[in-house]
Length: 255
Image 1 (tube, rainbow, N blue to C red):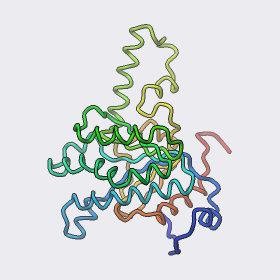
Image 2 (cartoon, rainbow, N blue to C red):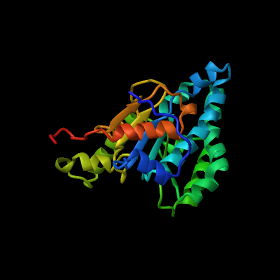
Image 3 (cartoon, rainbow, N blue to C red):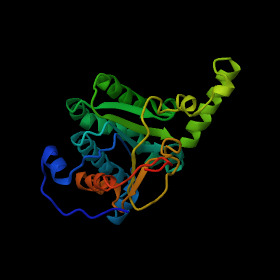
Image 4 (spheres, rainbow, N blue to C red):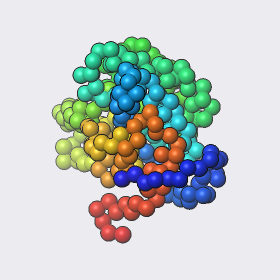
């Protein structure tokens, strides 16, 4: 459940941290960016207008994440199921990464952000891959926020593909089947080397994972808001961070 945050004027990141005492900042925040279509429908606009408006919400969130020292921001940009949508909408969604990066890559570089992706990258259109690969190359040496786009991503597909590769490596005597454990499996996931999300946010009022990071979110804290993604801003993001301050993470144990 979201909490209400009084209106406040824009403050520096230091002032904001001091005022709201954000001592317990999550290292990894994952977001299901939901509600673009509903945002557009409420205004009598085509769905693609909602997706375009959502692009600016992405950058507002990146700014807030860097201001508060978050290490990893994973954004669910396009799922393996989204291919079922109308072709016009899918084609537009495949152009959005290029449009976003053309607009905001200079700022990402200035803010020391590194761009990465998870998902079945090879299945994306060539123009999408070229834009993303260029951003990865130009930001590869940055060591600030890791901006991780989940594009053509589905968690079940990810786990199935990981299992296939594990079976292959067992057959090739690269792995002893008796040694397979959580850590081994994680090495075959798209998120290899990343810490699991501490906080998962979903916008638009829906309360489900929708095949997103099923393995990785086993012990994540969830935060839901009725705010539609294009209206998501720094103030709403801080609401989630404030709520996270009160979470006690036991991981199945007792504290």
